[in-house]
Length: 119
Image 1 (cartoon, rainbow, N blue to C red):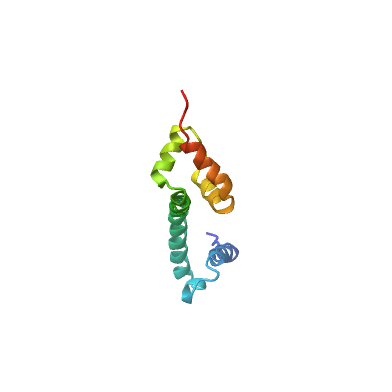
Image 2: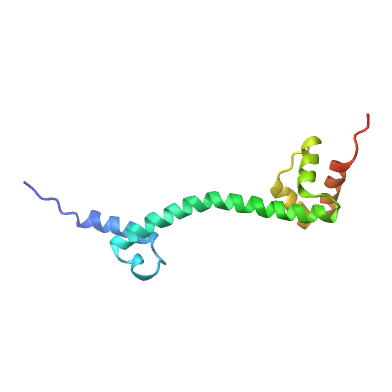
């Protein structure tokens, strides 16, 4: 039976693993067994934190909107409720950005949301 020598394939496999662990500390950057384990952990953390990043961002936008709206005499929950009732569909990311960079436009949005409807 002919034996298979895996020198090239094994080197390619190891090279790919070590490419992902570049910059890791201690033996996890250049010892295969530790590098494989480190990759598994890092990929699972990356997957989890991509989801967590969305939660953190939304929370930050809510805080920024709340701070801006409170200066105008409202609370965050009342403001969002008024926007929904008036059918103003601007997402929280844009509202937070407007509150920081264009406060006059944000103020007009708040005035539009708070004005009474005429019958």
